[in-house]
Image (cartoon, rainbow, N blue to C red; front, side, top):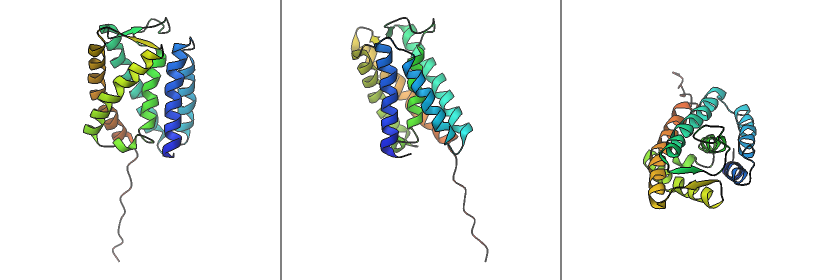
Length: 179
C-alpha cells in the first residue's frame, strides 16, 4: 500500500471515530475501521499476523484507555460505552493506528526509541484534538491529563512496534547455489 493511501485511510479512520462520537454517531468509526480492516486483511500476505496485530492493538487500547477512564484522566462525553470503561469508537482508534504501522508509519519500524518519542508527543495531541472536537473530555488540570496520556503512549507505541515486527512476515533467506 502506498504511503499516501495509507495516510489517507488512517486519517479517515481517526476522523470517522472522533467526529462520529462527537456528533452522536459512535458506530461510524467502528464501521469504517471494520471495513478497512476486512479489505486490509484480505490483501495481506499473512492474514493471521495481520488479524492478530489488529486484535492485540484493540485489547491493548481497551486496557490502557480504560485505565485512563477509571483513573479520571479521561471523562466520557456521552453514553456510548455500553457500560465499558472505554467506548468502542475509542478502542477502534488503536487497530486503526496498528494498520498504519505497515503503511504510512513504517518509518518507525524497529525504531523503538523514536516510537516512544512519537507516541509521547502524538498521543496527547490526538486526545487533545479529540477533546476539542467534542468526542471526549480531558480532566482538569489539563497538563496532568496530557502527561498521563503521554506516559501511556510512550509505552504503547514501542509495544505496538514490537508486536508489528514480531507478527510481520519475515523475508525468506536466499540460498546460494553451491556451483
